Length: 208
Image (spheres, rainbow, N blue to C red):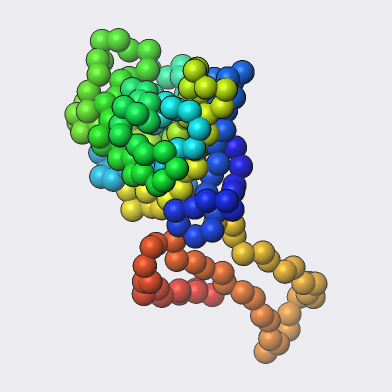
């Protein structure tokens, strides 16, 4: 997996995922800054541009149920929710163009719990009330009938957060004195960006 400038949905960059017939899958891992209650997840979608093969897509949510802000497979309160794998052809994705994948259109199962069964994401939210998302996997499984499976992925929306693959602006580090006298002048830079598809009003407030 790598950040590519070859094709993108938003900005100049996207994630390029590629797996050969010698491998099983490749994935994007998303770590949330703060655990997100599963019930508060009202939006989860991403854009995919299939290139080679008929890859199978899956979404996996790692859930914290014991309130330690992490997922542990040994904890009976924690859970792992994953969608049923679907090939691009099964969800009507067109090759060599950007397609929207809505996570709420998929069905899910609870890992290692056959009694849970297969259910919609909305139903899983009500059944796993109180669980919080701490990590997300977006795996791409290979097409066993093709020597290579590949796709571009971009603009992942998780609730009100957006993940794209644009690089951060480079920072120039300058030498400075270890102390500053009262009344002296210092200079620093705040770097911010707009990750939406359209212009937006933005206010930056800095507290001293």
